[in-house]
Length: 518
Image 1 (spheres, rainbow, N blue to C red):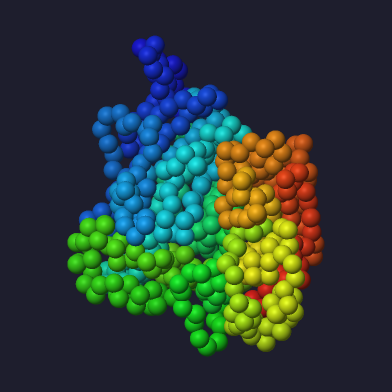
Image 2 (cartoon, rainbow, N blue to C red):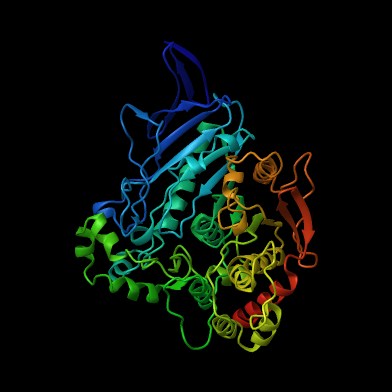
């Protein structure tokens, strides 16, 4: 066995039988694997203590040191979650692990860091998946990190007793605390992997995008990242609009009655009441095995509220994230955000239900909404956006909330960029560009000769400089309140545009101003 020179405290040890990058962290030694491009991958690295036993429903604690060489060649388990009404096999409460891909090994310089937050509604999903393998992105000269975080009842559960025992008088948002703890781990350790802790981009999709956005409003996350990429998720979520849209999708949810109140996160007291319904005695709940707890929330989305379980708890989130954005008080970081052309396509929906949805959401502006969408006399489906019901769902849940958030963000003096992704998955062209269709392009798992490589370049260029401009690709103009420029990713490649669905989003923004007063 021969030793290769040490750089930044890193030693690479090789033998004739095996080549395995070795890395020493303050918590212990890791043995990873080499990548085909000359980089390295380290998987299943603990960034916090297992949140089990007395640590269930508590803020994450820093990982404990280990002795000996830790095998970092395989993913850790997914966080405990339901699948088909039962605890998903292989998932575990002991799940707070992250994965790192370095573009070169041993590292010779500091590289920008891209920190991925997976989607799944904050009740499902995992970073422990080949779908989010970071090797291809790392080839563009970035260090990629993917991290698990507690989900469903373990990650987004509030309870009066939890709030009373907390020194911050708060509960819930444990999944967000895990993300913040993982970012603290990145700050403290990523330089050893060749990453720059002062140049971190968080990027996520769906609930991961929602979480990335709300972290921009958390004092606990300040200084832990410098840029944000959000794919199909915003802070501007109207619970009643979301409920109505999901009802149109066939989900079993009850529509609230009375006036619409705009809020993108649950109130702590409301969340505590919901948690207390699952069990009044906290000690009894802590004593239950994970599978039994998951049975309590086995119904669709039972354990989380209208905004992916995010709670205004007074500590992680002192104020509603949309309120923070509307007041220009979010973190001053560049933001790249967008959506897919046809995120969700509802089943056949009676026109009267859509009319009711518009009236409930838009109130005095409902007549304008009905005129725009033509629910009573629908036009033929648009080849890109689908029929009127599909347009309504995507406009109110994804597309126009992006515009509203961007208008706030640029008004506060921040750089911002918008996109729309139009490419349908192969073999499912009739469905259009559905929710999540862009993710394989981001991680380089699709090679179509045009858009896939462009997205990788734009995303990594943004991570490096705060601007998605990339050599050899069309210039991506900044979003402004006047032009509302965006990049459209079509089967023929990226193309700059202006004013995405402007009439529809103008109405949405006007309604948001009516509801929030700004």
